[in-house]
Image 1 (tube, one colour):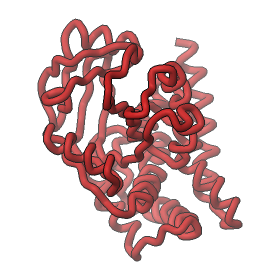
Image 2 (cartoon, rainbow, N blue to C red):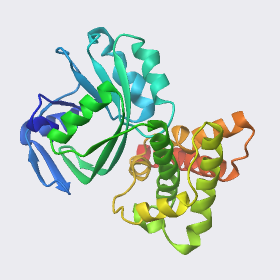
Image 3 (cartoon, helix red, strand yellow):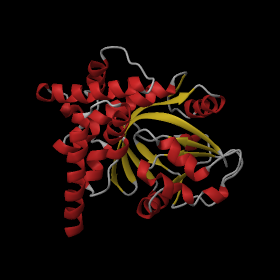
Image 4 (cartoon, rainbow, N blue to C red):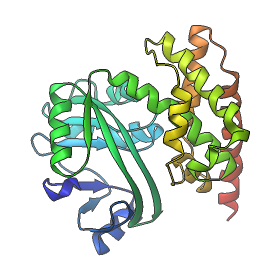
Length: 283
């Protein structure tokens, strides 16, 4: 959608980039159609005032950016649109002060079907109320993507983290779509995950109003996609559990807050990661 009014290049794995170059990007779901956009496997040049939108898995951030460092300019901006917490630290450790780094929160559901074809459940992007954040929001909105600017981005980051701590591991373990975990037998499990996240967030200076668990239930009940963690496990890939529930456990330990439910979830996903990886290798 950004390519309607901007010069956009999608950086992807070779099979995906080749399919897009041949036939365009087929989009299903809320944004149906075939998009004719440029695709490549790496960033080869950065014109003035370039925006790099980082949407890789968090654990792939360093690898994705290391080849770009030599091209960065002081007018380049990297916008982090990833799950989890701790992303900025990873990015800054690679790029140092060579460019501007901005964080955002992405509320889109997506499924990678095959090279050259994806399904998108349209949502919105949340950006911080900074000069650069407002500038990016304007570009997004002018392209038909909904972007919202907020004064307290950290709170949005924590809310999205909490939602992901519920959706991702539970849907991955049960092999179901997001909305299917909002059922009575899982009520206590979902709400205990949220409770631990809230307790840790409070120690980190983020305070939520009461009723967050119920709000999250309502949001999840409208999501029809398979979560990214479910998709990763099915493909035998590493998940982002360390930057989701694992980060809650880590920060909880720092503050002396017990997080037994999140800790259990992490252990189970780690087991499934290893199991699915072996199964994919055998195939």
